[in-house]
Image (cartoon, rainbow, N blue to C red; front, top):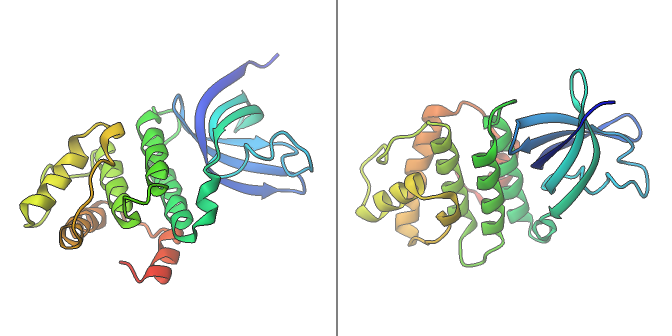
Length: 218
């Protein structure tokens, strides 16, 4: 009998397979990114319907197959359904999932990226922190987790923007979203993060293109 494996994670992607199944990409704390099939998840009343949605965060119980896992059951503690009430926040959230998918690898510790995505989605639901600032903090910390950053901004900026940069680089994940910036400092900070991103990342993200179209943001 196959062993049932229990892992903490979040669904990054979900796609239909056949009439009733879903193929999931889950970022887990224990084994990084993995592929799992949720058999019958699209059937009415299936207990796997909710757990097979993007943003679903909780405990997943899976059997390991030859090429992928099979989802047996799940206890979801957070669906982040509040994001659906705000189109912009939902697009930012989807972007975070795409970004996490880009950086995550199989059989590598995914705890830092998983916690970063979780904390960043929570931050999107806080009106006090602008979504554009949440985005830039998320991007910089994700790059820092993966060693693709400089300890100082890659261009000359004000002391306030430099402090924000260093705070994001060196702060624990739980303390990331504890500040706001004036518009001018945010512009400097965002420019530095974007420059760093262009240096290390050569991919376009679909959800970011939607955000640009919505907000005219670069």
